[in-house]
Length: 209
Length: 173
Image (tube, rainbow over all chains, first blue to last red):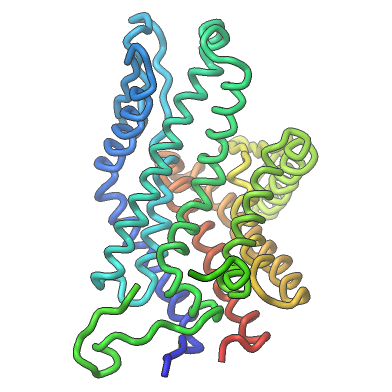
């Protein structure tokens, strides 16, 4: 018989959430320099993939990405984008994952890795669109010469979509997507998955996901 | 492979489609300039006024001008993203998409949005005092701690409400 989520599954989740948030914050703080470099590095790769000549360099300085172009005058100001605002949502995603039952099991760690990869992609795209919108709208006559009104609107919309809504909604949506069979029983929308061997007393067999 | 109709009959699949659809519509709507001018800015100004009133009650000499709160000791400006609106939209989308009675949904939306706004007010007031007493920690507290806490509070509230709503309609036994 399929075992249903206990009536207090949601209570356990909500109780775990504050502790999970503290662990997530500590993990993120530990990995922050690496995440800064990874997000700006991937965004730079994507920008340069469609750039001719390849002039953009994103340099991480004090948790900000400095947008350096090889064709800027040496005395020109260097625009920067705050990286913390772009990838702080990793804390939310990690906290939600760690608040689920058995967060350190192999299956949950695999899901965490897959979800984190998708979130990382969204963060790199957010930075990419920040930079492209900067190019399209903030460089005066140069922007008007090199980017059309349509391009300005498209990059503006994509920057908006991946910025506020994305930063807030993506961790939740990605967590929900990768942990569907865990979350739906918690909110009472579907039966819980069958218990694994360790809980059911049977020899240890992995759960199908 | 299940047909689309069979998939639509599954409450969890229907929830996912509705949730993402409502979220997309809501985020697109608030991106439009007329909606921004008619809803987002007045809402943010309203949030600033409430924060100003709370800080005045706490003895601060606060002046509110639009979305800006200033006192001789510190000043903060509340932007979209700091007004609790995005978290409220995610929460409301989750509530509206969930299979529950309209009464439960109405109660969830009203109660949840009020709770998120109370949490957001605590956030704004605490950030003001962090700015006064520990200004070097303002940015970290603003983004890392409070933005994360507000989103997690929204998710926690939705899970608690959804469980209650599911129990009410007899899904969870």
